Length: 506
Image 1 (tube, rainbow, N blue to C red):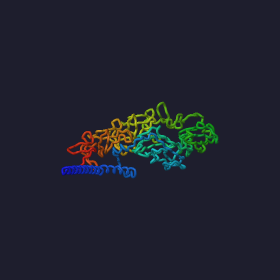
Image 2: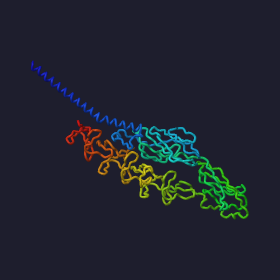
Image 3: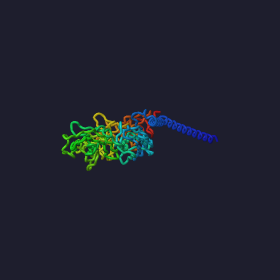
Image 4: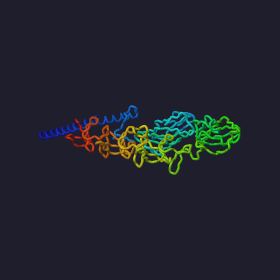
């Protein structure tokens, strides 16, 4: 009886000890989880929420170069490209006015005003401004606006680096160009043409040194084409249409009388503007000694020749040319026409495609316009330096090539052929990672945690991959030298590392 009771006592005692050991083990696990949350998870979560708050609420106080942690980017980076852009423009601009303040995201427009808005749910207009200042609008002017579009949700939507004209719809205007600027897209567009009546010449007078030659001064609002009517005793004698500011009427003064000339600005295109009123000169008296023999009629001097070919842009064969009212083509070299850069060859043709000029590479679209900013060609990204980012010795529009470059808030690395580098890069003995996922951050140098190919890495604040023992947010990790992969479930230098890659110091 005693032995039986003693056996039961021993059994109860052993079970009590086992329960106590199990309880202690569970308590140890809870402490470990609590320590992990306090030292690792909570600081990470707080840092992420703080970064989001600064970015969304007070961007003016954010760091000048903020690169999110790659492991956060993988979870939250935008995955849906915005492939189509649509902008609505309403304009009531008039000839003679200055450029007004823009009405952003306003669907109605006031007299002499301009409003601009969108109708989609992927992006909004966060800013818009006139590209150039104009004191007074003229007939035919097409003022340009630079519109900043911002994704409604940067965690879901992102803009492509560039857009072709067919992917951008401008209702009430026309598309010029588009380029990405960080998360935003900068779209340059033209407002519909300003129309109205042209101004007449400011003055019409006879040239005292050349009998029969009439002159006039150029008005501010002009088409560049003028109609001059010779009158004798207030009756029409001859009409000339010229692009110069003078005309020799003497061959038509074959009879005595009082001659005068009335001149007006005439339209080249009725859609642009209406012809002006006439302005008449004083009288010129032609006596018997001054009458002309009539020779030289229908002749034109070089200055007063009437253009027989289209003024401005025209297509000749497979090329674009630009012709001035004098009939002359644009001279070879760079030319800025309507705020766009072009390059013309020796035949006066606007070049297209890649061009090697002044020992630098440039790219020109099929329209002849020189590319600026990001350009996607043959599945590669290139960067043509805009004027706002030029450094010493660089030219606007030249291709960025060979080495590191800060663009906006990110670092990129460019190959010798000008295309951006993606993937792992070894530079000056250190490894860097440039995002190879095709989204809005393609080619961006990452910093912080990185997960690729089921491996975990850490890139310091300079972007360099860390190796060996490294402390992050007060917690020690080990990254294998050479590969940079974080160690897990192993012992390094006699120290145990758990499945999360952490060496616990206590």
